[in-house]
Each structure stands twice: as structure tokens, then as C-alpha cells.
Amino acid sequence: MRQIFVIRHTINCSTEDSLRQRLTFLRLFSHFAALWCLTLLFSLVTPLSAAEINLTLNQRSVQNQVTVEVINQSRIALPIQAVEVILDGRHYLDDRTITLTPGGQYQHQFTIDYPTLPGSYPQQVKLRYQNEGQWLTLSDVGFYHFQRQALLNEAATIEADRLQQEGKVTIRASQPAQWQLIYPDELALIQQQPETGSSYLRNPLHGINANYTLFAIQNRVVDGVHYSAVVRGKLSTTAQNNYPRGYLNSPTLILLLLISLTLFVYLSGREERHSHWAAYFARLALATFAYLFLKNGPELFTWLAQQSIRFAFIDPLYPLFTLFRDHLLSSHYRYFFRYFVDAYWLCIALIYPIYHYRSGFRGDLRDDKYSAALQQLITPWRQGLRGRKPAPGTLLPPVKLGLLILAVKLFFLPFLASWVINNVIHQWNLSQNLTWDFHTLNAYLLALFILTDTAIFAVGYAFESERCGSKLRSVEPTLFGWIVCLWCYPPFNQFSFTPFDVDLFPIFIHPPGWTEPYILAAITLCWGIFVWASVALGFKASNLTNRGIVSSGPYRYCRHPAYSAKVTAWLIEGIFLGKFFIGILIAFAVIYFLRGWTEERHLSADPDFLAYKKEVRYRIIPGIF
Image (cartoon, rainbow, N blue to C red; front, side):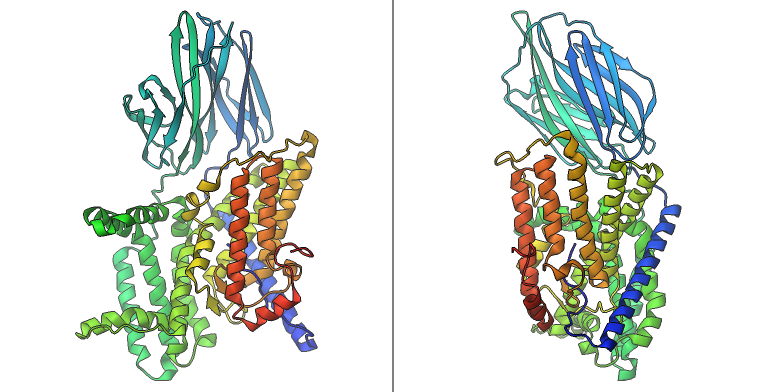
């Protein structure tokens, strides 16, 4: 979510220019201070959502003693209800309810009965914990070897749909009926087809996204020896989103759209002194249409998907329709509809006229990008009503600019607004258990960086002001530039990096334990540089656009400091923490290099950028490249 270079690059500023820059900085600082105060106020009145949980479950066996260890790496305290061991059909339960503090550990030793036959047995450990009033399960399955090791040489894989309400899990094996699926207790089994290895599960959870490890086990007795096999798979559940999609209903929005369109058409044909009101109603009409589209988008894409099944010539588009339908129904839009969209629409309807009258557009509406775009959109409809056939033509620059800006805002603003609100809630959750130890403070600081970055970009997408120096000059004109940018954002990033997530060769170096604080500090420093770049961008922050060239902050040293910092952080996590394989790290580096290259190609049409490029020669690494 990043466009580079803000604040116009100037050389040899006069005293007047310097004073103007200082006033601009003070104005920028005051806006961010107000935004931060509103954010804190919002955090006090917003109901909390499910917290981010990071638990580690370990088990080890020595003779008839099984030790289970639970480590809470979350930043909140967790209620633990029960720990259970299942071995050879017997259940061993520790049902003491405890609260595991952040960074805390819990250990329990079970004394088990020896199995009846020698060999290897699946040993299942289950942990039940609470997250925002809902009980969840964390499981692990290992082997218990009694007298001898006896493992089956059987190959199998587990394939699982992303589960929102219902989904399928399939065990791929030569004889799937011989495998038993181990799934979390909170998920309900709807139907099972052993002959195909398919199990249909229902997700009853609300407001929680979870990543589970699934297991499939096989047991067989041969010549008095117990043989077993275990395979692992992954299952992700998506929070069910039964939230209201805004408080203005569709008939009301349609009526408001018709009224604003009528007033725009009427005023655009009047004298030039009414042009600022025509431009205002153009913006109101476009905002209302965007609200209506996002509100009813899932039904539209559902209908398109159904039509693609009926008609073969659009059948290849079925996956695309379902992708956008699921995206619009996802949690990325929950807070946007619940807290943001109505307030934003009301600001445009009630407050924007005052601002627009004082500093808005005056002149030929064909030079106003939003008015020109709306005029282009309704012209075929108006010609059709008059019985004329719409004549194809080349889009004028203001029309093309207006349509592209609408596409940028329609795509990025909704989930950036949701991310900001979600990050505020996450920051509040961290604050409730804030302690003065390194790991807690580091996590708090990192979350604060991400919150600051998303807030800056959300403001950049939501508002455009010539006074703040954030007026949009141009939008990325090429399809390739759009592809490499959208590659990194939902819904496309659900699959865009998956083919590259492969372990080509080992890079994890297993550093000594004492180095962990230094590694985490280095990662946080990278994200600090990342958010420093966002602060330097200020109100001009947005993707795929040019709002003016920036040479302040980290942009004094290289032209893409945010991308450099982000990729460096991921490299450290992959090499020293083992979070990423080399394949996906290469993909990260390539895609962000391409993003920088396409952005520079776009910005090269601006003389200010060419001057900045001569001043700052290094693209990625200061002094090197």
C-alpha cells in the first residue's frame, strides 16, 4: 500500500518557501495529531474483537510418562480449560482451568498405561483455550513407540477448502477409507464419505479467523505388531460475516443517486457560475454509486457466476466472479460497513459542499476529472433514451484520470478503512496486558507502526485536497503496473504468492537463543523505516497515483525506502526465524522491484520526478544500488 515520493522537490528554497514548508509541516502534524486522538477515542467506545493468538504445544514421551508443554506467545492472557492426551483408545485428562499469562508456560505430566501390543501408536494431544468467549482447540499428533518402532510406509495428503460456513476436507491416498481424519472439536462434521476420503465440516465460530493443523492417522496390526502412520495438513477458517452492510438501504441509495444525477445534469447545462455545484453533485453521485455497488456487489457477482454456468462463452470467468464475491463478503469489509461508509458518505453529502464552495472547482466541467468521468458514464444512457446510438470515441485525459482514480479508491479505501479500525482494536488488546518486558514492548511498537501506516494511507485514499498538496495528478496508465501492485493485496494475494512458497534450498540458520532479542529488534527497526516513509508521504500516500514528488524523510537516501525496509524485514524473518522459504522471499523481492520500476516509469512523465531522480541516484540501497 505504498506510493513513493511526497512533497514537491525543491532546490535552494527562499525564505518564503521555507516558511511555507514549515507551515505545511505544522498543518500536517496537526491533522495527524487529530487523527490519532480520534483513533484513541474510537478505541474506547469500540467493542473488542477476537484477539490474535499464538500458542505453541509440545509433547514428549519417556516410558509411561508423557509431558505436555504449552507456551503462550500471545500478547494477552489466555484461559486454558483442559489438556488431554489420547493414546491407544484411552483418554487422559487434566481439566484444571488456569490463566496463562503472556509469555507464560504450563507443563503437565501424564502417567499412561502401556499399550497392549508392541509397535507405534498415534499420540494425540489436545488443548482447549478461550478466545473472546469462544472455546477453541489446538491439537498435535506424534508417535508413541512401545518396545519397537513400527511405521507404515503409506503416502497421503490432506486437501482442505477455506472454511467460512461449510467446506470439504479430502484425504488423497490409494485407500482413503483406511485413514481417520482428526479435526478440531469446535468444527462440526456434516457428512463423511470414507470411500472418497471426503469430510464435510461446518464452522460455527463467529468473528474469528483461525489456522488449524489437520491430521490423518492410519492404524494396522500385522503379526502382533501395531503399525501406524500420520500425515498433516492445513485448514483455514474465515470469520462468518453477518454484519450489516451499511445503514442506508438500497432503495434509499437508489433514490439519492437519481436525485444527485438529476441535479448534476441540470446544473451542468447552466451558467459557469453553477459549475462548482455541478461538480459537487458529480462527487455525491459517484460516492452514492460506489456505496450501492459495494453493498450489493456480492449479489451481483453471485448472479454473474450463475450466468457463467448457464452460458459457456463466459464460463472461464466463473472463478473470477466467485473470487470477488467472496472478497466482498470477507472480513476485510466488516468494519468499513459497520463504522466507516455511512459517516464517509455523510461527510461528502453535508460537509463537503462547504469546502467545495470555498476551494472547489470553478470553470469548465470538462476539466474536472470527476465531472468528466460521470458525464462519460451517463452519456450512453442519455443517448439511448433519446434513441441515438452511442458513438465510440477516445477518452479525454480528464475522463480517463477520473475513471482510474475511481477504480483506485473503490478498490483500496474499503479494506484500508477496515484495517485501520481492526489495528486500533488490536492495539487496544495489546494495551490491556502491556508489561515492561522486551517482547511485549516490541510487539506493541510493531503493531503501532502498522496502525500508523494504514491510517496514513486510509486518509490518503479518503481525502484529496489541493491545500494539503495531495491533489491527484495522474494514475498508473498501464495494465502491467496495475497487476504488479494488486498482486500484493486481497483478494489476489490469497493465491498470487502460493506457487512460489517452496523450499528450494535451506536458508534457516538456527541462531543461538540469546540472539533472538537482537533479531526482533532488527525486524522492528525495518518496520520503523517503513512507517517513517509513510509519515514522509503524509496526505499524498496512495498506490498507483502521483500526487507530487517527495524528497524528505528516508526518500533523501533512496527512492524506494519502504519497499527496501519491508523486503529486508522478511529476509531476516526467513533466515533467522524460519518463517519463509527461499522461493517466496525471491518472489517478494522480484514483485517489489517490479513495483518500484513501474512506479518510476509512471512518474517519469513528471518533470519534478526527473529532477528528484538526478538528486537521489540510488533506487533500493543507499550508496549501493
